[in-house]
Image 1 (cartoon, rainbow, N blue to C red):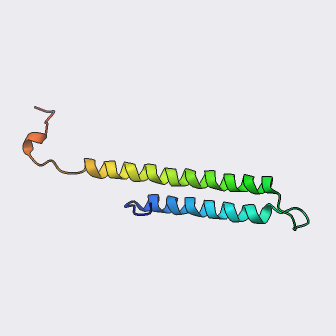
Image 2 (tube, rainbow, N blue to C red):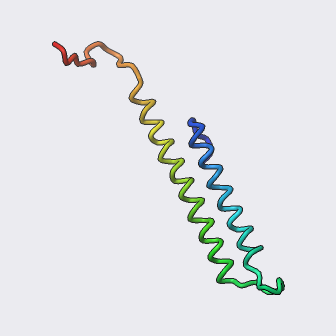
Image 3 (tube, rainbow, N blue to C red):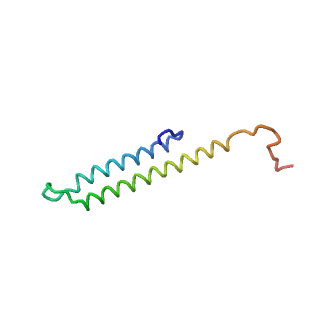
Length: 90
């Protein structure tokens, strides 16, 4: 997943991973009852799902950027023969 060529794509993928990890940790920490002894699982689950959705959004965006980068690199390749070039001005 992190074997990308584009730096922006790598940064967005890492941001997505960080969002998922932080969402999991915040779910455990902030999902506790006001006493601090019991876990409110519905609140914990909301934090987990929020972190997962946000993280997957950034990872998906990084994949889109990576695919666009690969398409751009393929289009920049020079043609092998002069016959491959079509001149529109002739």
